[in-house]
Length: 85
Image 1 (cartoon, rainbow, N blue to C red):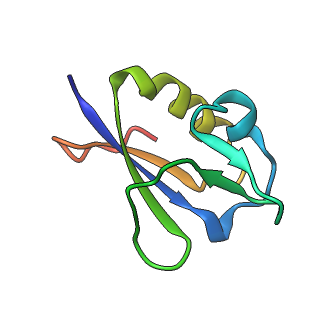
Image 2 (image 1 turned 45 degrees about the vertical axis):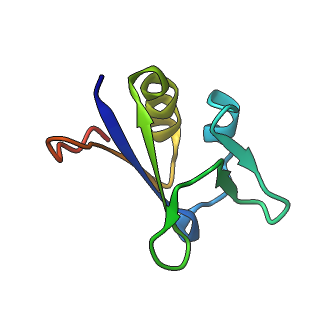
Image 3 (image 1 turned 60 degrees about the vertical axis):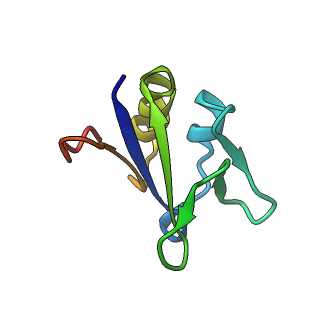
């Protein structure tokens, strides 16, 4: 089963809430008006979050990334480095 890396730039989030609306299992809106990625594995610098997901989580994460008007959610195939979104 393939694995993917989700990169989220919270500083660039404009609070549209699309991610939380289409994928509430992975995203939640915070009181500060920005989205939070649930259970990120690590923070790579201030406001830069990373999470590894598998194929069963990919479709929901793709919907969140594609719907994000600020383009702050990126998905990369772990084994090849191919940028999915």
